[in-house]
Image 1 (cartoon, one colour):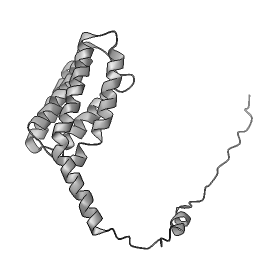
Image 2 (tube, one colour):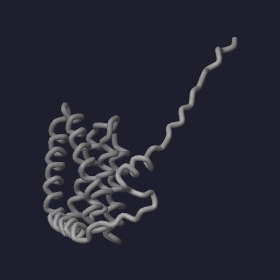
Image 3 (cartoon, helix red, strand yellow):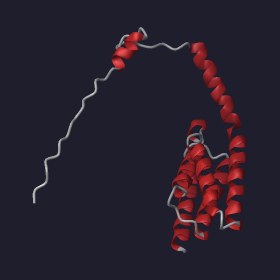
Image 4 (cartoon, one colour):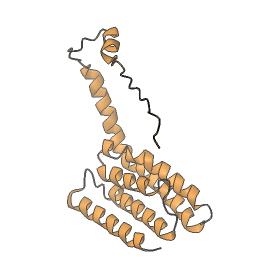
Length: 170
């Protein structure tokens, strides 16, 4: 039995980015200069926000902890709590590195992936969430900036060990 031939069409779209920049009066080879005062003001604002970041993110970690506590106490609504944790972790993962706390980004990304759709809802999964939250608390409490060097490696290893330990449980 033979199947009827399938027609495939391939459309090649023209890249109009060059045309769009020309409309702004930009030459494709032009060098763009930024106002130094404006750049300084932006850097100053970012540095000021970075100083406040540990206090701000600790309040977010406290919120995570509260949602986690509800997971422990309320198995019936656990899926909704996991979704809330996932949303908070999503917001956090993009910010830590910006303010010099790469480990917060790393742990939040791990938490985000762990609580994504299709994740388990067992007590062991709740413990893995707690391990992520605990690791983030240590980073902020101890002001572990950047990748954390040896301390950062130990925190990552401890979290990985916790994930493995509780992943084995059912």
